[in-house]
Length: 263
Length: 277
Image (cartoon, rainbow over all chains, first blue to last red; front, side):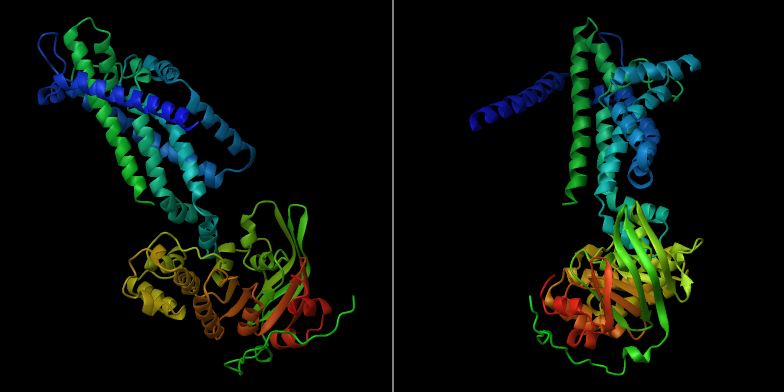
């Protein structure tokens, strides 16, 4: 039993380590400062992923601005306000949303935003990512709020606080570290998404100048370079993968840091 | 089974201040008439009628699940937050029915403060905990007055000397006994007229308990205090009158002295002498 579980653990952890080290091995060669700040160039002229890094950050910012307030609000509703069947239905829908394949979200945003606007845009990409974020943030917020002891609510109510002040002034601050963790995990999750961006943000070979234009992102850039026939672009795709991995790892580590303070 | 009358095992400690007796405060602060309370279909309280005079300490005793906490919570409508509960009957505080339609629950809870069994300080600083009630009720806008009220509340709760140098540190850094006194300070800061205490010392060690008990003794000069306790010695030590609950019914209300020496009801005597419960 011990040997079997140890073997399985070794396989899983080993696979992870192999992925990480293989990406590092393949990617480190093309990685330099120029690569990090330059925009893509034609084959043979070098170029970099500076616009894609910036684009990814812009997309994360747009989706966070839209997704975090909405997601947190839904979580607060589910935990503090909603009761009975309607809240149950909302919870079920949120769970269903979590399970929707991200490509479907992309196609949906293409249909409702990109087609009417008649062009791809950073905004559409941000909305698609926000739609993926909302259910994750909503459920983690709900769980975190439910962990706040009931005695705190009663304590505040007994001092003559109206319900909304209890929620805003006591419950949400008490759950804030947990809510922040949920938000960071959602950001880490969407920073790796490619499919919803293909039909929305589309990608770009230039630095972003407006939210109303197509925008580059690390993931789409990796996808485009990986399916290209050029060895140089393949190498750049590996380097971009390494950058993306470090970004996601960085977010995850900071999540750990935030949560560690609580215990 | 024949029951022989045995002398109650609890010795009454000497009251430190004999002038404060039940008879002296004749004004009725809280008056309850035929109160019934239901959790869903289960009836938790049956026809409770009771009067609580002003500026005394009344203790509620009785075995677990007898309804004493539930009854306490009907006095500031804390049970409102529990879904599927129902109240009928009247609870008059200063001759005003708190269950009458249109009653301002926020106003009621300002007037009737509560301290819970488990200390529940907010995850904020010591100062902010005590200031919370003052701020939300907009009692004062001046920060110096706020600081003054916080200091006074902490002094009233006999906590000031222990925390005056670290008002900005987290309330959760205090010990259990200090946290409970902080919760008392928090309740006192908004100067309620009635203070409900739901087993305030049950989670504390004997030293912290005795501090809370001394505090209760001091507080009754200004407040009407109702305390639920499992500990009959505690009831005997701190209260002027005692009410005994059993299975959701109020069995007997009497002066504490009589209750523990010569109760009127057989059931009370059986409980106090440890025959059940």
